[in-house]
Image (tube, rainbow, N blue to C red):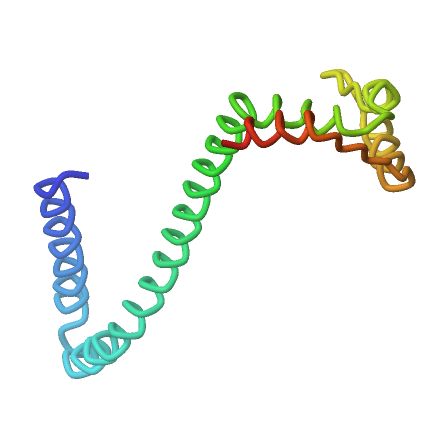
Length: 146
């Protein structure tokens, strides 16, 4: 919303409010004192109303900012794994003699269902993976991390 659109909207809302107060006064002229009293009550509630609206808008903006941050973080993680993470995972896989078994158990496919995913997680938690780290594999890993 541009500044002039916002200004026009504010003006229209103020005019509508003034019109309602005027109509109330014209329809009930004998209750002018009561109308003035109720108007003062409305003005007394105004700061509280502003506080409530401010808190709600602040929470909405904070949630929106958090979602934007999460989206950017997911993009960063995706970029990392597409360029660095996947080769790094392969190098880590080379450090275990059970690499073929890992490949077979964890060959994730797009058509995997929840049960297959749970089974893969269960396999990882229950399996003790031996690590063999000869110097040449550690050097390759060190080069990849630079």
